[in-house]
Length: 251
Image (cartoon, rainbow, N blue to C red):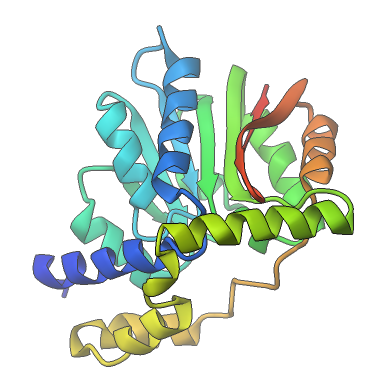
Protein backbone atom coordinates (compact mmCIF):
# COMPACT_ATOMS: atom_id res chain seq x y z
CA UNK A 1 0.00 0.00 0.00
CA UNK A 2 1.34 3.43 -0.95
CA UNK A 3 1.76 6.38 1.36
CA UNK A 4 -1.04 8.86 1.90
CA UNK A 5 -0.59 12.25 0.29
CA UNK A 6 -0.70 13.93 3.70
CA UNK A 7 2.05 11.73 5.15
CA UNK A 8 4.29 12.22 2.12
CA UNK A 9 3.76 16.00 2.20
CA UNK A 10 4.63 16.12 5.92
CA UNK A 11 7.89 14.22 5.60
CA UNK A 12 8.98 15.92 2.39
CA UNK A 13 8.45 19.33 4.01
CA UNK A 14 10.58 18.27 6.97
CA UNK A 15 13.20 16.88 4.56
CA UNK A 16 13.33 20.19 2.69
CA UNK A 17 13.94 22.02 5.96
CA UNK A 18 16.65 19.73 7.33
CA UNK A 19 18.54 19.74 4.04
CA UNK A 20 19.05 23.49 4.39
CA UNK A 21 21.59 22.66 7.10
CA UNK A 22 23.80 20.95 4.53
CA UNK A 23 23.54 23.05 1.35
CA UNK A 24 24.44 26.72 1.61
CA UNK A 25 21.83 28.75 -0.32
CA UNK A 26 20.05 25.54 -1.29
CA UNK A 27 17.26 27.20 -3.27
CA UNK A 28 19.69 29.38 -5.17
CA UNK A 29 21.74 26.29 -6.00
CA UNK A 30 18.61 24.59 -7.33
CA UNK A 31 17.85 27.70 -9.39
CA UNK A 32 21.34 27.80 -10.89
CA UNK A 33 21.13 24.11 -11.83
CA UNK A 34 17.80 24.76 -13.54
CA UNK A 35 19.30 27.81 -15.29
CA UNK A 36 22.08 25.64 -16.73
CA UNK A 37 19.69 22.90 -17.87
CA UNK A 38 17.45 25.51 -19.50
CA UNK A 39 20.47 27.05 -21.24
CA UNK A 40 21.84 23.82 -22.70
CA UNK A 41 18.43 22.49 -23.77
CA UNK A 42 17.24 25.66 -25.50
CA UNK A 43 15.98 24.65 -28.93
CA UNK A 44 15.87 20.94 -28.04
CA UNK A 45 12.42 19.38 -27.91
CA UNK A 46 11.47 17.20 -24.95
CA UNK A 47 14.88 17.21 -23.25
CA UNK A 48 15.90 14.10 -21.33
CA UNK A 49 17.37 14.70 -17.87
CA UNK A 50 18.57 12.24 -15.23
CA UNK A 51 18.60 13.27 -11.56
CA UNK A 52 21.28 11.28 -9.73
CA UNK A 53 20.62 10.60 -6.04
CA UNK A 54 17.21 12.24 -6.27
CA UNK A 55 16.05 11.57 -2.70
CA UNK A 56 12.37 12.55 -2.42
CA UNK A 57 12.45 14.49 -5.69
CA UNK A 58 13.37 17.99 -4.53
CA UNK A 59 15.53 18.90 -7.53
CA UNK A 60 13.37 16.96 -10.00
CA UNK A 61 10.30 18.94 -8.90
CA UNK A 62 12.02 22.25 -9.42
CA UNK A 63 13.32 21.20 -12.83
CA UNK A 64 9.86 20.03 -13.84
CA UNK A 65 8.49 23.44 -12.90
CA UNK A 66 11.04 25.19 -15.09
CA UNK A 67 11.01 22.70 -17.98
CA UNK A 68 7.49 21.26 -18.22
CA UNK A 69 8.28 19.47 -21.51
CA UNK A 70 11.33 17.68 -20.13
CA UNK A 71 11.40 13.97 -19.38
CA UNK A 72 13.06 13.58 -15.99
CA UNK A 73 14.30 10.23 -14.72
CA UNK A 74 15.07 10.34 -11.00
CA UNK A 75 17.28 7.60 -9.56
CA UNK A 76 18.02 6.68 -5.96
CA UNK A 77 18.54 3.53 -3.90
CA UNK A 78 16.57 4.54 -0.80
CA UNK A 79 13.08 2.99 -0.90
CA UNK A 80 11.60 5.42 1.60
CA UNK A 81 12.83 8.57 -0.13
CA UNK A 82 11.78 7.23 -3.53
CA UNK A 83 8.26 6.53 -2.27
CA UNK A 84 8.04 10.03 -0.80
CA UNK A 85 8.98 11.39 -4.23
CA UNK A 86 6.58 9.13 -6.12
CA UNK A 87 3.75 10.25 -3.85
CA UNK A 88 4.44 13.94 -3.25
CA UNK A 89 6.20 14.85 -6.51
CA UNK A 90 4.59 12.25 -8.76
CA UNK A 91 4.24 14.73 -11.62
CA UNK A 92 7.92 15.63 -11.66
CA UNK A 93 9.72 12.48 -12.76
CA UNK A 94 9.82 8.78 -13.39
CA UNK A 95 11.47 7.33 -10.28
CA UNK A 96 13.92 4.42 -10.59
CA UNK A 97 15.36 2.31 -7.79
CA UNK A 98 19.06 1.72 -8.60
CA UNK A 99 22.48 2.09 -6.99
CA UNK A 100 24.50 4.68 -8.90
CA UNK A 101 27.71 3.12 -10.16
CA UNK A 102 26.64 -0.49 -9.56
CA UNK A 103 26.77 -2.93 -12.50
CA UNK A 104 23.87 -2.25 -14.87
CA UNK A 105 22.64 0.87 -13.07
CA UNK A 106 22.48 2.97 -16.24
CA UNK A 107 20.59 0.24 -18.13
CA UNK A 108 18.04 0.17 -15.30
CA UNK A 109 17.03 3.72 -16.19
CA UNK A 110 15.47 2.59 -19.45
CA UNK A 111 16.79 5.50 -21.48
CA UNK A 112 15.67 5.44 -25.12
CA UNK A 113 17.85 8.26 -26.43
CA UNK A 114 20.98 10.23 -25.47
CA UNK A 115 20.76 12.39 -22.38
CA UNK A 116 20.66 16.17 -22.54
CA UNK A 117 21.72 16.56 -18.92
CA UNK A 118 22.65 14.56 -15.83
CA UNK A 119 22.13 16.56 -12.65
CA UNK A 120 22.81 15.91 -9.00
CA UNK A 121 22.75 17.81 -5.75
CA UNK A 122 24.36 16.80 -2.44
CA UNK A 123 24.73 13.18 -3.53
CA UNK A 124 27.87 12.38 -5.52
CA UNK A 125 30.19 13.07 -2.58
CA UNK A 126 29.07 9.66 -1.28
CA UNK A 127 30.72 7.84 -4.21
CA UNK A 128 34.28 6.71 -3.66
CA UNK A 129 36.77 8.02 -6.22
CA UNK A 130 36.96 4.87 -8.41
CA UNK A 131 33.16 4.74 -8.60
CA UNK A 132 32.97 8.46 -9.34
CA UNK A 133 35.51 8.04 -12.16
CA UNK A 134 33.46 5.18 -13.62
CA UNK A 135 30.16 7.08 -13.32
CA UNK A 136 31.58 10.16 -15.04
CA UNK A 137 32.76 7.97 -17.90
CA UNK A 138 29.38 6.27 -18.20
CA UNK A 139 27.58 9.61 -18.22
CA UNK A 140 29.91 10.96 -20.90
CA UNK A 141 28.97 8.01 -23.11
CA UNK A 142 25.24 8.49 -22.41
CA UNK A 143 25.11 12.24 -23.17
CA UNK A 144 24.57 13.84 -26.56
CA UNK A 145 27.28 16.20 -27.86
CA UNK A 146 26.78 19.45 -25.98
CA UNK A 147 25.05 17.66 -23.12
CA UNK A 148 26.13 18.36 -19.56
CA UNK A 149 26.79 16.93 -16.15
CA UNK A 150 25.77 19.39 -13.41
CA UNK A 151 26.88 18.61 -9.88
CA UNK A 152 25.73 20.80 -7.01
CA UNK A 153 27.67 19.62 -4.00
CA UNK A 154 30.28 20.28 -1.33
CA UNK A 155 33.53 20.46 -3.30
CA UNK A 156 36.53 21.27 -1.18
CA UNK A 157 39.19 23.66 -2.44
CA UNK A 158 42.80 22.53 -2.67
CA UNK A 159 44.92 23.51 0.29
CA UNK A 160 44.03 23.30 3.97
CA UNK A 161 43.93 27.04 4.65
CA UNK A 162 41.64 27.90 1.75
CA UNK A 163 39.48 24.88 2.62
CA UNK A 164 39.08 26.11 6.20
CA UNK A 165 38.20 29.62 5.06
CA UNK A 166 35.64 28.35 2.54
CA UNK A 167 34.01 26.16 5.18
CA UNK A 168 33.84 29.10 7.60
CA UNK A 169 32.34 31.39 4.95
CA UNK A 170 29.64 28.80 4.28
CA UNK A 171 28.97 28.26 7.97
CA UNK A 172 28.54 31.98 8.58
CA UNK A 173 26.14 32.25 5.64
CA UNK A 174 24.11 29.33 6.98
CA UNK A 175 23.97 30.94 10.43
CA UNK A 176 22.67 34.20 8.92
CA UNK A 177 19.97 32.18 7.17
CA UNK A 178 19.14 30.36 10.44
CA UNK A 179 19.73 27.06 8.66
CA UNK A 180 20.90 25.38 11.86
CA UNK A 181 17.54 26.01 13.51
CA UNK A 182 16.20 23.03 11.54
CA UNK A 183 16.49 19.41 12.63
CA UNK A 184 19.48 17.53 11.27
CA UNK A 185 19.73 14.34 9.17
CA UNK A 186 19.87 12.00 12.17
CA UNK A 187 16.90 13.64 13.89
CA UNK A 188 14.82 13.43 10.70
CA UNK A 189 15.42 9.68 10.40
CA UNK A 190 14.78 9.15 14.11
CA UNK A 191 11.46 10.97 13.84
CA UNK A 192 10.52 9.09 10.67
CA UNK A 193 11.04 5.87 12.58
CA UNK A 194 8.12 6.75 14.85
CA UNK A 195 5.57 7.03 12.01
CA UNK A 196 3.68 3.73 11.58
CA UNK A 197 2.89 4.56 7.95
CA UNK A 198 6.62 4.49 7.14
CA UNK A 199 7.36 1.24 8.97
CA UNK A 200 7.33 -1.11 5.97
CA UNK A 201 9.54 1.19 3.91
CA UNK A 202 11.96 1.62 6.79
CA UNK A 203 12.10 -2.15 7.24
CA UNK A 204 12.90 -2.57 3.55
CA UNK A 205 15.56 0.13 3.85
CA UNK A 206 17.10 -1.70 6.80
CA UNK A 207 17.33 -4.96 4.85
CA UNK A 208 19.40 -3.40 2.07
CA UNK A 209 23.17 -3.00 2.15
CA UNK A 210 24.08 0.56 3.15
CA UNK A 211 24.68 2.80 0.15
CA UNK A 212 26.07 5.90 1.83
CA UNK A 213 29.82 5.86 2.47
CA UNK A 214 32.03 8.46 4.04
CA UNK A 215 32.56 11.71 2.16
CA UNK A 216 35.01 10.95 -0.66
CA UNK A 217 36.87 14.23 0.03
CA UNK A 218 37.46 14.75 -3.72
CA UNK A 219 38.46 18.38 -4.25
CA UNK A 220 36.92 20.62 -6.89
CA UNK A 221 40.07 20.45 -9.03
CA UNK A 222 40.11 16.65 -8.74
CA UNK A 223 36.48 16.51 -9.91
CA UNK A 224 37.43 18.59 -12.93
CA UNK A 225 40.39 16.32 -13.68
CA UNK A 226 38.15 13.23 -13.47
CA UNK A 227 35.65 14.85 -15.82
CA UNK A 228 38.36 15.70 -18.37
CA UNK A 229 39.61 12.13 -18.09
CA UNK A 230 36.06 10.89 -18.79
CA UNK A 231 35.90 12.86 -22.04
CA UNK A 232 34.39 16.19 -21.05
CA UNK A 233 36.22 18.94 -22.91
CA UNK A 234 35.07 21.78 -20.69
CA UNK A 235 34.48 21.67 -16.93
CA UNK A 236 34.35 24.22 -14.15
CA UNK A 237 32.29 25.87 -11.42
CA UNK A 238 29.58 28.29 -12.53
CA UNK A 239 28.44 29.14 -8.97
CA UNK A 240 30.04 28.93 -5.56
CA UNK A 241 29.44 30.00 -1.97
CA UNK A 242 31.94 28.69 0.53
CA UNK A 243 32.56 25.09 -0.48
CA UNK A 244 29.10 24.76 -2.05
CA UNK A 245 29.51 24.61 -5.84
CA UNK A 246 27.58 24.06 -9.01
CA UNK A 247 30.08 22.30 -11.24
CA UNK A 248 29.29 21.96 -14.96
CA UNK A 249 30.98 19.69 -17.50
CA UNK A 250 30.12 19.87 -21.20
CA UNK A 251 30.32 16.79 -23.43
